[in-house]
Length: 297
Image (cartoon, rainbow, N blue to C red; front, side, top):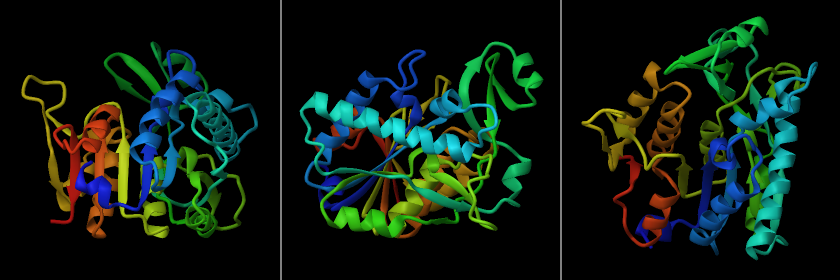
């Protein structure tokens, strides 16, 4: 196993919501089984927190009159139920697995509410339906996707309970979908926003004093000149470069938040890894050739 994985005793893994989707099924049991088969194997006997995304899932449960705060709570519950079913199917004991419905404080006056950047829901072929509903959206290669505000996470209300569970040997699912956004003014669940799950994963890593942040995505890491003939995977990156690249407008809603979260972890003296499931498997075999590793120096 890679020394970076071997040395870490407490780990936060951020798992993208797209990794839990198969076709039109946004709560796919097979996808969850594939994800947890890798994560639970590589990090067996470690103190582990799993933070999952919910970009494809949150709009699937969002009903008229419901805030995103309320919808995210539902996705946390549904994803955890799916995780338990997947683990049972894989023969992994669930007796020590816990869900913490995680509340995250945000500032309702944040500038993020004037500049929506977080993609949610499916890609669609026409912008007209999104426009008719008054949704903000982005366009990429001729298809469109809704975007919503994604304010910075200020504090995780439930981190002490999460840490207690880790200290008691539990595998913890927490911070799902970036956590349930809570209004910092009145502590109510009245916030129409989706917090980036990678930023919450890093804040949670700091609060529970985890040694390692692993961000799992669809590609092996940060690929410079992605999509061109000159594309290449960057294997090593200093925190300052990760933070700088993460602020690039072209990366908003995709690799940008991952680089920022990894850069923040590294700036605090910890190691962060951005990779896919295959790259994580390779790291478990002491092969770091398929991952971007972000460090302080």
